[in-house]
Amino acid sequence: MIWTYAAVLAVCAAALGVGQAAMALCGSRRWSWLSPAVGLALLCALCWGTVRLPGDGTVSAIAVLVLTIAAVLYLRGRVESGREALRAGLPVALLALFAASLPFVVEGHFGILGASFNPDMSQHLLATDRLAHGEGSQLLHQGYPLGPHAIVSALNKGLGIGLVQGFSGLTVAVAVLAPLTALAAFADQNPLPRTAAALVVGLAYLVASYFAQGAFKETMQALFVLAFALSLREASLNPSWRELPLRFVPAALLAVGSVYAYSFPGLVWPIGTAAIWAIVEYAVSHFHPSAGGVGVGSPAQPEGCVGEGLDPAGKVSPAPEAAPRASRGPTPATGPAAWRSVLYAVLLFAVLAAPEIGRMIDFQRFETFDPSGPGLGNLFGQVSPFEALGIWPSGDFRLAPGDGAVPAVGYYFGAAFASLLLLYGLVLCWRRRETAIVAGVLAAALVYAAARTGGTPYTAAKAIEVAAPLAAVAILLPLLRRPVAILYLLAAGGCSLLALANAPVGPTSYTPALAELRPLVSSAPTLVLAPDDLLADRHGASYIAWELRGGEVCIEPEEEAGGKPPPGVRFVVAEGPPTRPPFPRLRARRLASPYVLWERVGPVARRSPCPLIAVRQARQGPAR
Image (tube, rainbow, N blue to C red; front, side, top):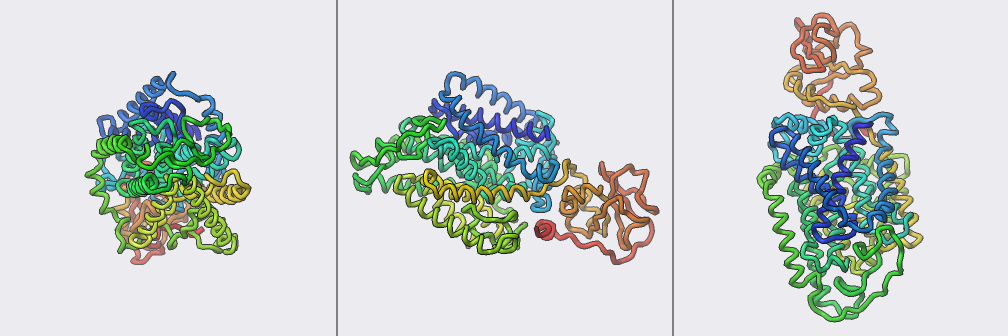
């Protein structure tokens, strides 16, 4: 527990400090809630750029420490409204930390998040272990984005935090940073609705569901996409930001974070959002009637606008009435100054993302992108796009309506209610010239449509998850002061808590030993003797099955082992010294601490009761 929360604290502190320093360098003199996401994006790039230097992560840890200290020193005397921001952000951070801790509280221990839901953490742990030892891995050679893994490696080398605790801490930290980032959309609201809205957006149902299966990469991408849309909103609606030459740099840094956390697919959302937003802004500035409401760059600031002109403590002031545009023509969001700002941002993105181009090219051959493959991953079928709206009363997002404890009508009613709110919210956002939010939702919808028609159910589900926070913002931003928002907050928040409480937590430690034994045991039936508490309390059976996938494997508690292994079993894997075999007539074949691979002496029956652990079967895990 201590090491997990130490990792959470380290990641959050570094992200907040580095991110706010970046915002200050761009010209912000007040605290910005874009800083959590911007800082995390920079940490991904920095750690990946240094993790392969001598020291295998030590240089990364030192670089993060030095940069964080330099950021804090730079911010002294340069950031206003720090106390107000602390009063606004502290309740959100504490409540988000509590919500993200629910899986550990319910399971009664800390360990690998998502065991029996999603076995992919095994591959991430193996890749990070080899990264921390200066070795290669399959993910490394395939161009897989390893920015988050590099952060965990830095935690391991710098603070001595184990890999399991490092990944758990990083995943929990993202769950804390996301609601803090969502505050950028609600800083002008009263404290209670502001806090509730930030939590529901940052921990939207599908985000919470992916958190529950340990999918840190997807939750990070959802955070970056949300922050990207909010950064465009800040650059266009915030009066003190509109004239800054570097106002689009935060968006560029967030796109860099997407590259190092999600590779080239991560750029689809930022590019789509930016393109739609630019088209809409151009159309509004050139073709919209001059008396048609608050336009981007007009003197009035619409309700819900966040930035240096608003108190981050959330003091409410009356929203200004819609003001007519003084004249037609280019606005600060579309004029020559804006194009120079865009050029600066694009150049910075190109410089920071250039080292990853070769790996992005390699990654496009990754098996997940093969539309002719099974494409289900750990899913049971296509995931409903209505889950992105936040009201889905199931602890397992993979289940169809009615397959859980709630009747199907409950799903349909929740989806219909949230759909109406989304449509109404988008109309209100359009009227208030919240073009960045509208563009983000439209881009996410187009990405999902492309993934659904040309991709696999696995990639389509991820597209829905990334869209979830944007959908929640589009609903809550214009409706938060209306009674209907209370019902949505209660329903969506309850569904998110249900997903978090249902998260399985697996083993507390990791070793690559089982994966190293896989080539040997795949040649003949194998019995694995595991501690009873690992199998009964920590979902160890699913974890071991994935580690030894591709062979015939029996998994039994070591306390219940009989006098001899089942007929047909050639190998036995057990913990213990190589001088004490668990059964007679066994000889030590290989030592892979803490395991010993034993081989039976003499003839073995041709058939065994051990099932074949296929890759697809191991990925899907048991139905819940």
